[in-house]
Length: 274
Image (spheres, rainbow, N blue to C red):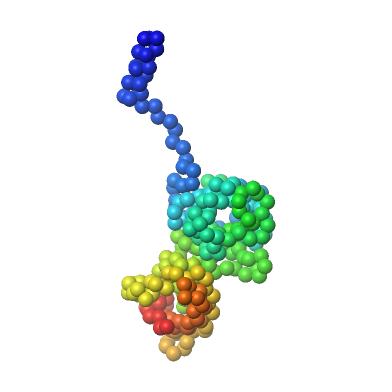
């Protein structure tokens, strides 16, 4: 008996001075290395992630990830969370509420990190025992919706965000495309999408930054540029905006005064009239 006690004491001492280390395990929901993704065309992604494939979806902003299986979709990927735990992570990303809001995501596959965009609203059919009532959509560069077959601007800008290409896009954007970036940022409540096309002084104005808070849904219609100014260096663009917030439906017409220093510079929003 005393021998067993001595051996136990000896092992305890050894473990104190020479702790036993185990190989680090990957956390359950956090992806350890979050980086910019590769912006790849849907036709190529469609082959990398075929129907039936299981893969990770990494949220760009938080690093949280979950696993999904691609079940269907020809114009984009229709996917379902793999398990109830994966559903819980997805719902956590949307503050425990299902949402159509887009989020920039990264997808590791075959040693590559792909840039994509997802929403968090279950719809249609689902076949997995995962607590998720349907499927949700993941888009890539050039992918479109199934019903209208239109390319969704919100998804496309989130893909560029995931790929670190918003600034590059803004540098070559038309004045109308620059306004679209701003409005998509409003719609998705993500000021980072709008920042490359907004004058720095405006980003310090609470009236402007508050536009990116509190909107639950939004539609917009961009009008043709005004010819009031020389179109090379300055122009005005109007947009009719319908948005829902805590006060219900709000309808506004926003007028964006746009300016650029030269033909090779990108357009900047220097003033917004309400």
